[in-house]
Image 1 (cartoon, helix red, strand yellow):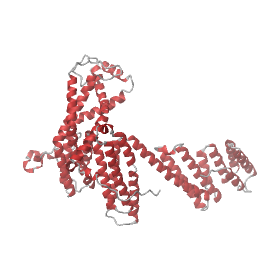
Image 2 (tube, one colour):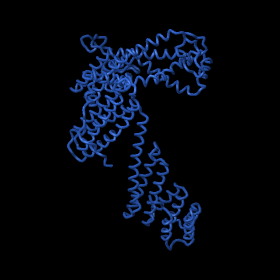
Image 3 (cartoon, helix red, strand yellow):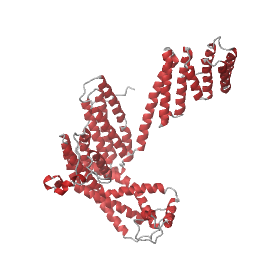
Image 4 (cartoon, one colour):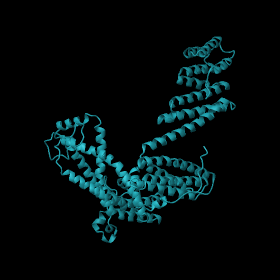
Length: 609
């Protein structure tokens, strides 16, 4: 952008006119000389003296604004330029507005710093506001003089820069989001975005062609193309997160290669959706987007753990279950519903009178939400995968539990025998792992027993939704949610322990925290805090608070134990899930059929910007 400098001052010096006092002209010339010699403070003083001698002269105000801007007094310079912009002389007003635009652009550059593409938060907003203010000043100059080339040049340059820096910020945010998410989180992110695009595209299917329709389709295509660019980062995460060395050594198919192939197919579906949107073929775009969603869901199921799938199924089903009537705080959203409870002939008078007080009545919705029609099949798939996970992993988990039981029969170390750095004893680690395994095994046994019923209820809900029977679908969806929550009950304690592990890790980062906690427990016998911290250790009251420390250390060990197992479990689960999915695909994994579709129509279309 153009700079305001000496030529402006010399030019304005000529415009001061014969009516300006000689003394004022002399001061202006002194100021110009100081300005030429980069003596900004002296120039400011000279122009200030000139203004006292000629207070109505806008030229003097403009010159002082230039000096103040050069010495870094931005607010004072802005005020003087704004005053000079009100001059009756058009040339002075134009130059004032132009320099105001330059000033705001320079301030934006200062806010952005040396790495403008990496600024975040308020700095972004502040810089954009300054650039927009700069554009307004250039517009003001052009309203007075439409041929002012400097203002027009900077106006277009500023507009282009705003688009450029916002694109850089978007890419920076996308890369940051990629780096922060693990494979599971990234798949969830992609599926959520693809689902939003599907919703947007479905709005186009019944619309007549128009300029607004073409614009919306073009914008949706651009957004879909941006999402397609995330496929390569997804493939990188698959290669980094899913190991295949062990499988290759044992002659099995590399799971990373299999998943990579599926990711490529997802990308092909996305690209074909882009091409369909560009051709205004909304129905074709919807079909390809649905295939991309099915592929992303299949990838998720191949790498997600049993716990992740269960949690996601519950999280997805809960929003579609209407709230109960008169439900008390902290009560479950939906109580178990037996067949007898839906039969009016078997309901007693007492139960009818108290019906409004029980969270058994579901408030049915009047219309079917289109989102439910899309999500309920996925919930059915997730529910069907739970027994698969359980059947595959239960034998190995039970064997691990037996091995831990044998180890627990060995002589135990005395209490308080942990190392100086607070590490748990081997016996405590085994106890924590045994508790975790017992909960996981109990949940998986429930999944094998109750999973088929959850699938049946979910499929029935799906059928009711397709027939637009919202009330009947609500009842089935409530039953699905209740079954899933019952399966998850044995894992609740483990989830709470995970949160406690995180809290303890934060509290104990300082090396002296553990010792301070022990001393506090010894000095506060009988208080509520002591009762809460030692509630699991009341059997032995003569260990001077060491039991409280051991309990905290036991909780803290679970997090590290989980991390040690995660890598091995992830590889085993990826391999076993893929194998099982292929064997029982027709019955349990209907979404995997969509993953196998070969979508090779058309070629890539390069972006036009």
